[in-house]
Length: 503
Ligand code: ADP
Image 1 (cartoon, rainbow, N blue to C red):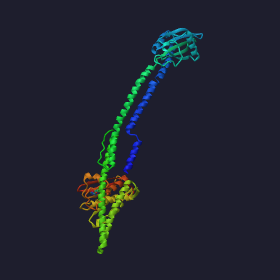
Image 2: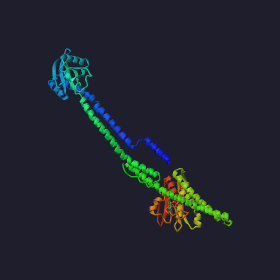
Image 3: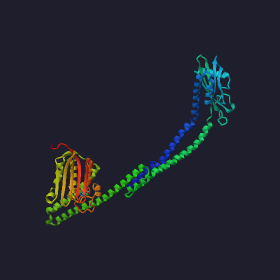
């Protein structure tokens, strides 16, 4: 059995990754993915974003200039834009499909194309823009040594020395109120980002390595902090499973692991307590079983061997002892069935007063012949809804205990009182009482205050646990008041079902 469990745990271990590996993997993958996204956005697409932004500026500039065309401050406006956006600007009036009067000219960059190409070419560009709905954009690459010479060719040398410079030329045609065309040429240079990207790439490699290592180390430290208490708890739990109930779980680490350790400590205490009680039960039950069996055997042998001993009293003794054996066995069965939930309750409406009276009948012999004073007082008949057989058992167990632990006055008082729709049954005796520190334990299975077990007639230690299991199943409240030397009062309450009130 043990071997199978261990084998299963081993298999689980192989199949599932531990916290440490999981956390290190997750953290590392997370950092790698984040860095990859960061690289693509910040470095990989840097060129694209830069070009888009730069081209977007053309619209801003030409719109600004268009408003000033025909005014005296056109030159100033062009100058402002040229300086702010680092571009060259030329504005012409047009006539007969050609650029004619130059209205403004600002040369602010070194690689200016529009100030170094012939007017014919400018006129050509103007016509292209006019045909194109008033806007035309041309992008070119210039080799550094051939500054000033337009080249549409791409794919020239990629070495740093011969890295081509990118130039963009925007041509915007506007029409003034007199129907005359004006053309705005804007020339912008795109600073090559190669070296920036290269520097960022080198930096990024270092950042990448450092961050991945840092993530793995952090995840490892983090996982050690989480998993160590769990590993220790697992070792403790294995000891617990092997029967070492003295094991203690350290309440350390995070809140959840502390709570788990506290719960395991509680479980270990409970298992240990139940184990002690179970061992006591085996001792007590074997004693309880052996006593009547020895008596039955003894009486039977006497009756077999000595004809004169075959008396009704001896037969009654055998019957009594057999009954006690049967009570013991049925107590144990009842408790295990009630606690396992296999003893389903069948609630019916019945007269509780009458049911208590029925239990009291069983004690009439004790009252009549053995000097017991077993009384039942009730204000009136009360109906309740519950499992009748179970309730009879509750009352019987309480009265039986009161009789077993009765005081010198041999008085057992059972009372039924009703208030606020609740009916309370109280069973009182004037016996030795129960010490306050033992009171919480008496409802536990196999618990007996009197461990020495002097009286064979006294029960199995199961009676009150059956009472508790039944009353809890019914959702009823119950309790005990007891004082050493004065006696005990056990009580429980059920909801009254109205209907039997004489008023
Ligand atoms: P038992 O079969 O031993 O009576 P119970 O579960 O009914 O087992 O009771 C548990 C323990 O509670 C008893 O062993 C006894 O020590 C104590 N006890 C129960 N009822 C009384 C009572 N009326 N007076 C004193 N002690 C009681």
